[in-house]
Length: 441
Image 1 (cartoon, rainbow, N blue to C red):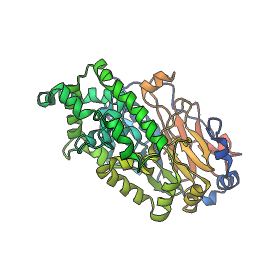
Image 2: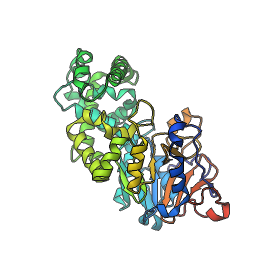
Image 3: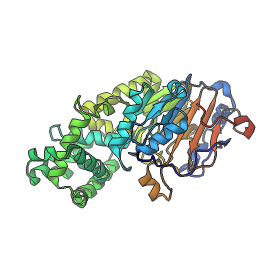
Image 4: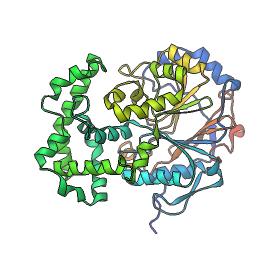
């Protein structure tokens, strides 16, 4: 049997207090603007509502099933029984857990399809699983869904907009289908016409997008698309894919991901935008004021209903509106703003912390305040291709645990200790108080 590759280093068996970190913030004025209110929440355990079940949050597995399975093992929720993507089983602790996958399952890593099979196995074992949408995941959904739509300036560019990041997935699907669809593909010129935006798209797009985007955003999109239109075909050719190959593979992707009987039809069908339990809101990236207004008026379920509706019927409105901002914001000036008013709205609902991925870290999870709202950043660079670029060794592993006993625990094989945070204890917690909290479920 092929040996399951060991993760780099060891999962930590000791713990330390988890301190707030604002050293890498792009806007420290934003972080500190509500310090008195945030400190009250951090100091007062009575202001927090904790989940009834232990939560295991895994963000941004990025097509590396071995890192994903190693992370599940680190949670104590599964044990490995072999080397394959489906070779694990739930433990007693795992049957009591809530597993939340924080988006970006696709791209970057060595195997998109095997990672999806690992996630599917978790569902099949009867685990409680919430699968959240990430920007990399939805980019594929938009690209292949747009191919079936009547050509329009707001959608005809969405396939090429995926860029060269989609090429590894296309290669995997080509191997999966064994090139069967290629025989039915039209000639190369017609394939390119169907995949690429029209020649006059750059002239027509600004007017079509005016109701969704401001002038600066439209100009950024045009600049981005000029680069992608210029580079996409040559990037495919460098990977050994002709335009006929790409078109045929795209049709196979539609069968696999969008047709009811496709092997991965469950992936987008079961996906949701966000999840809330107690004082915690889980999503891929972050919040803005318009999203807090929806949550205040109609709740988190409304966000998920709107997400499903828009990705089915209005792709452009979705991707350039506030819903997609939850998957890609980094609280930059170009992102939709989260102001004091938005934080107050979300706080009035009892939500004290946002748990998310999207912003990767090489030394374990990060705990920070953004506009005075606690953010638990759980993307710890799991996939080995990204790790190699960032100077990290081997396979990554780690999870963020939200425990019913009032502790948030960050575990990563890239940091020597489990990081432990608990309201009211953040300034004086000691090793004895947190021993045994790292990953015993």
